[in-house]
Amino acid sequence: MPELVRICYHSQKMAYGKNHHLITKDNLSQFLQLPEAVLVAFKEGRILFAHFSDIIRVSLISKYGGCWIDATCYCSSTMPEEYKLLPYYSSRINSDLCHGVSYCMGAGVIDNFISSFVRDIFYEYCKKEIVWIDYLFLDNLLEFALRNFDRAKTLFSTIPINTAKRANLFPMLSEKYDEKKFVELCQDNWMFKLSYKKMYPKMIDGIFTLYGFLCNRYNNS
Image (cartoon, rainbow, N blue to C red):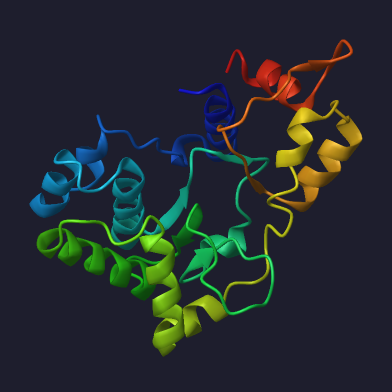
């Protein structure tokens, strides 16, 4: 597990405790029985791991409800209780009519229309097509549902603006750790999207960077 992913994992585990489940290739079958067409497409390399993950997330949300949080999302606290009750949830930073984000999405009910619609399209696509049409296929389908189905529009309209500062932690990782700044940001936002595809310094002039602080904080978790 990459170091940054480990930090995010432990932050999620601390926030959610026993309600947090790490989904891996070794335990997936305990939660889902995916169609054979999906498993074959993945085994044959016709869909990438990222696409397989997309199928898994919408399938889990459709079956159980709850929230999917990517392994590169840092959680400073648990999701506010009122969001857990929404019929559909996504991080939403403004009032624009858009599909939200797929790295943090969920539902307070099972078999919600948006996740189930995308899941069914994925399953049928794996049966009939050879090449995955687009890397951002999930985002495209979410956008399509929102713009073409009133049920999807209604579900999305219930989501309040939230996690508006979800991108603000990422540039701070390479800066000297500022406790006041970090605490204030975490009080305003429960989830932050990060990336493991970059190298971050742990020290600057003998002082911990935020990344170094987080590594030290979760090193023994």
